[in-house]
Length: 197
Image (cartoon, rainbow, N blue to C red):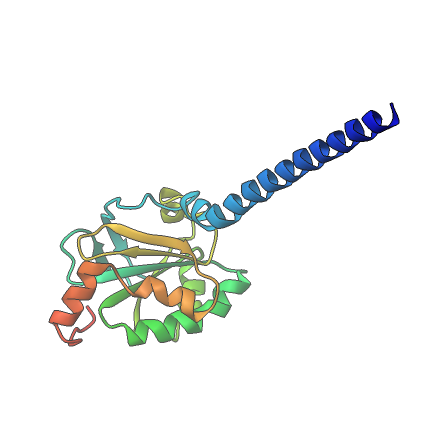
């Protein structure tokens, strides 16, 4: 009698351990998948749709017009920044230095503030960038920009191929300047001799 109770409790204990082990494994797997895909989900949760055509007329703070659309002479990186955005101030010098180094990509800054505040924010970047003031956040709302600082890469065909929060240091931001394969081929073909518009 005692022996059979021992074996019953022994089997029950190991069954319970197996159930607990399976539950822990499934939880780790579930949270692991969430961790792996979190960045992609965050990237796709806001901003413009990937492979959507960017087709806009922009008016800069200097009152000049700029056409963003298919058949452009270069790729574009659109940088959304805003007043009272501490991270926008932190990434600005990184984006400025990368824009100066990547002459095959035209930088467009869309500042979600007045013309005066946009001019003040981008005063040291106006030679390397086309600056637009968006005080009513019309353009940001049109593209469903979830927050700032935010980057959108538009290739030479006018297609949006990259988008996301501008964070994680120079290495992660530099990815936005790398362009897609077609842009890289065009850059190699031109041997790096590309002038800004």
